[in-house]
Length: 114
Length: 111
View 1 (spheres, rainbow over the protein chains, first blue to last red):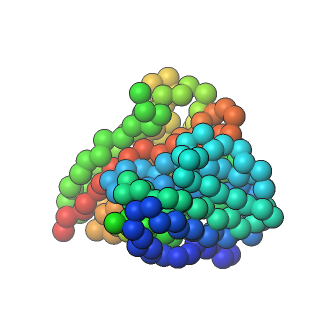
View 2 (cartoon, rainbow over the protein chains, first blue to last red):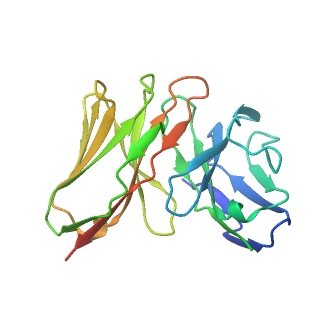
């Protein structure tokens, strides 16, 4: 079974620039998540999709972050403009459903904002 | 109060030792509990689910205490390869039912 695919693996940008990350979940997984993991901390949920609809984006900084999952499969997360504090690993995860299914993570995109 | 709290450690134990981690959660409505393992600069990987009756997988045992709202992970006969960060995850219990993660507990097994 192919895992969650993410790209790019690494990205370095200057503050105020924009950046986009891509994620393709495990085939058949209806639920897709974007998490932010700052060094030394646990993953923090940014947004959760169920198919192509947003289920929870309460912790997404909507003034600069946006995400979409237009066809209910792959997803993109965008930051515009980036701030220094956005430096983190952005993890995409998917699960079969939103109830008690465990999450499967991609290998993440490590973002450095200078 | 944070939704999920863990002792960040580090725990440094010799090979063969038994080590236990606890994780407390704040939402009594939470229904799903998991332990994840995260190696340095890697993504979290599911270690085991935590059921009401407890769960054992080889040297690893996970337990749930609903009354005190904590989950535990016990590792017996520690191996060098067990060195990693262990994250507990607890679901929201209501609404979107997504997972909250603790900050992780760093374990180093020493030869």
